[in-house]
Amino acid sequence: MIVIKPPAPCDFPADAASVFLAGSIEMGVAEDWQSSMAAHLEEMDIVVLNPRRDDWDASWRQSIDDPQFRAQVEWELDGLDRAGVIALWFVPGSRAPISLFELGLTARSRKVVVGCPDGFWRKGNVEVICERFGIPLLTDFDAFVTAVRARLSSRATR
Image (cartoon, rainbow, N blue to C red; front, side):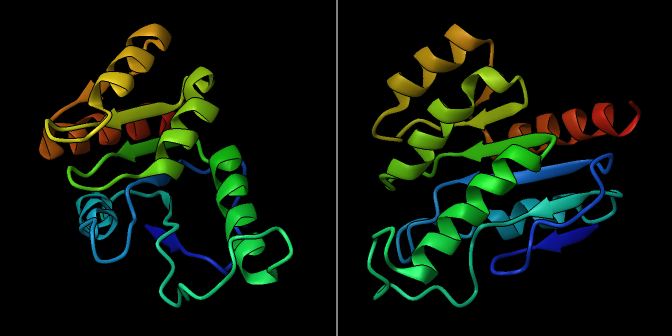
């Protein structure tokens, strides 16, 4: 397994099995589920794109004019485009507005697996979107991991 985090480029072979770990990141609110997911995938021959930046600086202006902020957003957009699978986990107690945006942005891609346990404040919206677009929706993290692994395995054999 290779893990790529920003600001490293999303540079890997187009035919490599890959997963983008979209979902709740809110520092101080959302648990680091990305590390847990990566640990569950570590023996697979895959590329993991983890947007949870080790050197995130909350003082960056959320503006297209802030080069660090813009680079982070562009990294995430590139990763969403390049990944073969998008694993999107919504953490209860988090707001995850960007994750909701990413779900809408990628819903038609046929490469999304969603995890949304009870307690996520917009679970109903997530359920409707997943049903509309035929996106697998899991409410338990272990089941979510199993579904992501299965999707990655099917992509690796293509």
